[in-house]
Length: 176
Image 1: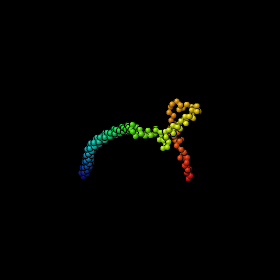
Image 2: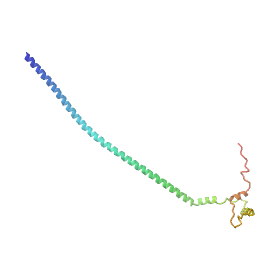
Image 3: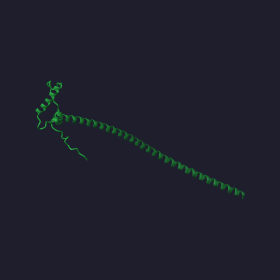
Image 4: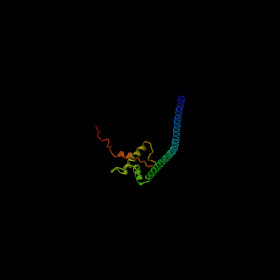
C-alpha cells in the first residue's frame, strides 16, 4: 500500500504541477493578449497623435496667417487714415482758397476794410472841413502834417466824434 500511496502522491503532485503549468500558460496567454491589445491601442494612439499633431500644425499656421492678415489690415487702416487726413487737409486748403477768391469773401473784406458810411446829415465836405480844422491847429503848433499835400484822413474815430453824444452815456444804470 505504500507503493500505492507513493504512486497516489506522485500523481497528485503531477496533477498539481500540471494545474500550475496550465494556470501559468493561461496567464501567459492572457498577458500575450493584453500585449497585443496594448500594441493595437498604441498604434491607434500613435495614429490619433499624428492626426492631432497635423491639426495642431494647421491651427498654428492658421493663427500665424490670421496674425499676418490682422497686421496687413492694421497697416491698410493706418494708410487709409493717413490718406484720409491728407485728403481732408487738401480739401480744406482748396475750400479756403476757393472761398478767398470768391466774390462773397471779397465783399466781406471790403466791408471790413472800408470806413463806415457817414450818418445821413453829415457830408464829405463837413468831414473835410473838420479835418482842415485839425490841420490848422496842428500847423499852428509847429507840425507840418497836411501841409505837404498828403491826404490826412483821420479814419472813423474822427467821424464818430462828430456824430453826437454817446448813447451808452445816456443809458440809465441798472440796479438789481
